[in-house]
Length: 600
Ligand SMILES: Nc1nc2c(ncn2[C@@H]2O[C@H](COP(=O)(O)OP(=O)(O)O)[C@@H](O)[C@H]2O)c(=O)[nH]1
Ligand SMILES: [Mg+2]
Image 1: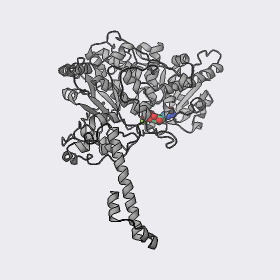
Image 2: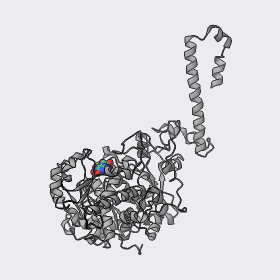
Image 3: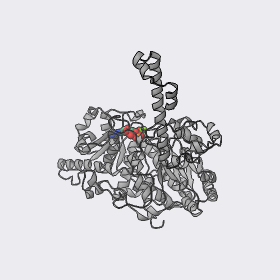
Image 4: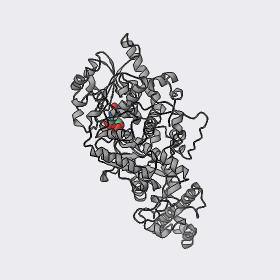
């Protein structure tokens, strides 16, 4: 390109020196210079792409090697890979090429070691925070679908998804659901690109605000430790599957490549990426509020008929009888129809992982508000396993492995240790340093009935919290003077009072830290409808079960709500799952889930 320029416009030093360039010559030269630089850098970027992909360029680059005609029909196939891709985030890079071999000294999910995170002492941290356990036989368990697929030498199947568009705990709930589904279906789970998440964009510019799930959960270890689950990055998936021409537009049938051939979408505008995924991958339209997703024990499509049979029998019996389960849980090892009767919660349909879906090489779960498609549910209120042992395995898998990072547990353990030492000093007979906790959700919360004045919050909770207690309040209310009335009755603390114990922690993780600390309260009072409160209760359930606290046999926990009146003491009773599921958590997810481990 630059040669041609020189030929057409040979520089004439003598002429320039003599007369100087005209105005038009200067403009022309600037245009040519810019054009030359852009052209050269595009060439070199293209070379980098080819080198990075490890191919010879001509043979590998899909736009050079594939059917150009079919590409022209694709909405996104026409763009050349022009932009240099951003460096992959360190935590995600380590997830690529995941193998099942453990390396020496690798983090293990079954333990909690805080020495590298600034303490506390391992024993103290474990005693305080660990509700999970390491169950070797669980790590080897492979779901029936995966077993069948492996046995017949089937090819790798994938599951992709879009994170929920709500707050962090909505995102967490949908994520738990897809992880459990991926395991049950025996599909390799593709983690979405890191991105901004609603309400997790604090202090943008001075700290990271593009998050992936690996920023909160031990995903690498999860994949490494489990025989039955593989997790890869979007980049790896797109490189392996999309760039090699294995994805086709669902309408036209032609091979379709990602927009701009981009594989690394971390921190990018994801609108074109999502449109592409929706265009080329089967997108189940399952709605957790109207159907129960049922998995046959055999993993065989023909056995789906049995599940339908159970469902029709239950429907013929008449409407869902919620009251019959109050403090009378269906034993976890009951016949499938009895367990389905409790879990169906009045839903008229089953969502079946049928033969057609089983044959799809990739499934994509959307969060698409326009189509009202969203997995805002608890995995356990949506997924039903005919085999009770598999059902309990999935519960343990979530409890033992889908947990917040050690870094967060350790920070929480440091704070709780300090709160306990304050509490011990406050009252002579408080040997354990027991303290009580609240979650008071205000901020952007849309459930107005929960928005009550502090005096009323106090009136409604005082019967549960002894006068003079040390009270830790987790809240998104910025005006701390709102809580002054509590100071007349309790020794009140907030996360801010312990900032010296977690300096440098991304402030967008403060919510998770608040949850972990609040989960350790002797008595907890939370905000109904809040999924943030919900997860605190789930973790309290895990602890209650582990420590065999009073009422644990029925899944009771020492938790209350401020409002509404009919729900205040609802966590003091066993209740079956009930719509709308996200309003609260249910004991079925923590009660008696360690049964049947030996029989897997
Ligand atoms: N630090 C902190 N943040 C909170 C608290 N309550 C709410 N938030 C923030 O607000 C978000 C609430 O959204 P979400 O997690 O979906 O819970 P929900 O809206 O209560 O169901 C959280 O993820 C936090 O970012 C709190 O007690 N402490
Ligand atoms: Mg929310």
